[in-house]
Image 1 (cartoon, rainbow, N blue to C red):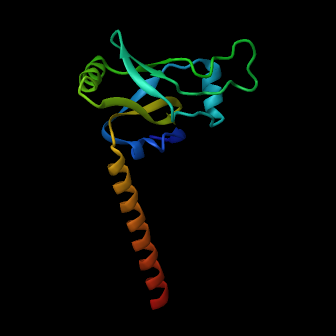
Image 2 (image 1 turned 135 degrees about the vertical axis):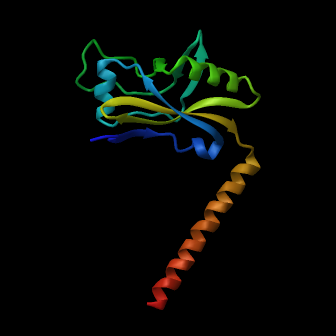
Image 3 (image 1 turned 45 degrees about the horizontal axis):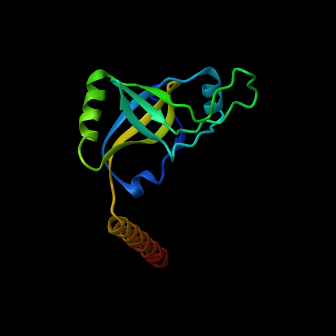
Length: 156
């Protein structure tokens, strides 16, 4: 059962608001109730961001709701969480975020062979006209597929 991926949360707005230059997979340090809550498929990563502090990568603003059967040992839903990356990856991320307009954002939260992983991306913000252009291309592609699909249906 190699590479069994169970996606928990995706940041759908990320590819609309940013150009993703590079993608990395990072482990994430979680408590027991956080893992149980994630196994129920509950998390929101849309508002999250990643920053480097003291040679360590941290994820902030990722919302993992409290575990419903948890007691006083439950976790804080929006606490900062440490990311597990190699030192050279952290140094590379730090170097790339020093460039103007670059940031690190979470793209996907998932389980890979039973371990929680966070897919992060080095991103550049899109301008408003870039977003409009991307939407226009998406609509044109959808219309072309719709037209092609109806023509194919007529020819049968």
